[in-house]
Image (cartoon, rainbow, N blue to C red; front, side, top):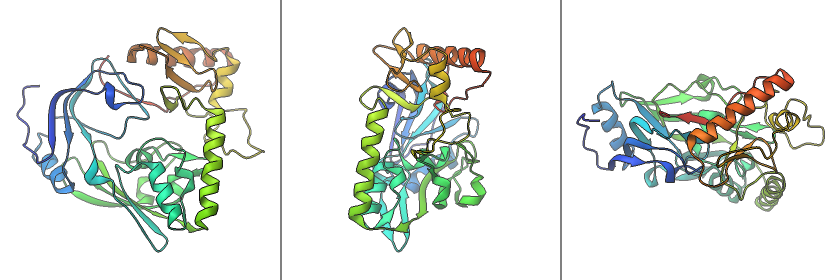
Length: 306
């Protein structure tokens, strides 16, 4: 890119590779990577940035495939100035860069129950955008409001109802950057909440390839909800069941592999490219369509140019 960009107080790096910023460790460079110093820096930068230049807000890259050709425009990654966590009364306020697991732990220490966040990889900004959920509880069940900076630099407070949450979906406008989220939480005994989170972690580690390089669940469940973890949970329309039935547990394509442990986890098993990961995902979608008639929808976000 040859455009002149505004000069922020934070860091603005041209042609910055993104592979090391994603959990799958793949992908080409961003034209620019912007890490704002604070909210005012972010707002001023976006206000001065040519509206024709695309903007992509990125969290910790836990649910992301950046394609090998990289991302045009400016990738915005929030850091230290955006990770504060405060608990007051029955409310938890968290910066968008705060990790979901950290928010769950801090809330539990304050006797507030946001335990569902403990096993969700990633940060609060991404959790809001995707209406992240686990064991039958979603961001939508607890969110009060978010603060976000619009593409034109304007600061907005958005009520949870206006985000029109669905399964793995919100109506957050394109190019808007969530900077803070406010949650309501039920009171609970800190020791009991800590024990529940330990139990959730043990259950997750027993069923998911947490030691491997993945981006979490690859496809949304056709059932339209995430696993509840309860004894009566039906596996009939779970993505992993359909993938397993199509004979693709452990299937490999180059360095990409569907996990042996949990077939809905797409792994970089060693030296995979973004193209291999996406191609394996598309192969899985095709085979599941042929064997079951169900259309798997990607949960992992794929961005950039091939």
